[in-house]
Amino acid sequence: MLPGSNKIVSIDIDGTLTDYPKPWLSFLRTQTSQDFDSVFSAKNALGLKNYDHYKHLWRISPEKYSVQIRREMKELIEYIYSQQGKVYLNTSRPFEHYQQMHKQTTDWLTRNGIRFEGVNKKSLRNLENQGVRFHIDDQITELNRLSNAKHLKYLILVQGNADARDEFGTYINREVHFSDTGGILPLMQNIFAREERT
Ligand SMILES: [Mg+2]
Image (cartoon, rainbow, N blue to C red; front, side, top):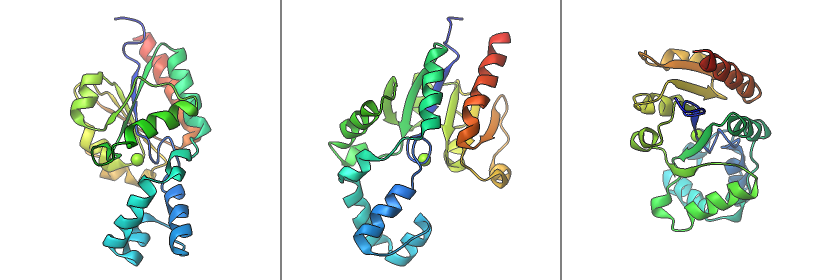
């Protein structure tokens, strides 16, 4: 096997690279003068139609493309490349509805010094085509949805609730890991070291 070929990592953007939904909720506060502690409570209080209206404003706002990227995730990506690995950023951002969004997203990542092979729609097919062995996400539903991707071996939940463990299906030939953002680099170092011994 070529060096690094088993170190192909897919990373979600919002909530994983960033601390979404915090920036979105603070944008919402400036728009509505109301405080929301979660997406769920914002949807409830505003109603779906209003919520979507503000979400649209957020998606075209400069604020969205200046959100801070977690230092720990930057370090993780640098580590992956230092080990001859590769990173694909896979996201649910609705590029298909906003002409500028893909470019704005890649420009924002590049401005922040993030290295990546591509920014793509988070789909099973894309993960398979990229040959990713790892997927890192903040949502268990997303890990469940993508768990069948052909080359995937490691499903890593960051910032998730460990109780969510029960919501995971049982996967054959898949390893499930839970980590906070501070633990993600040591976790990956462990897995890479183990992979190199096999
Ligand atoms: Mg996410």
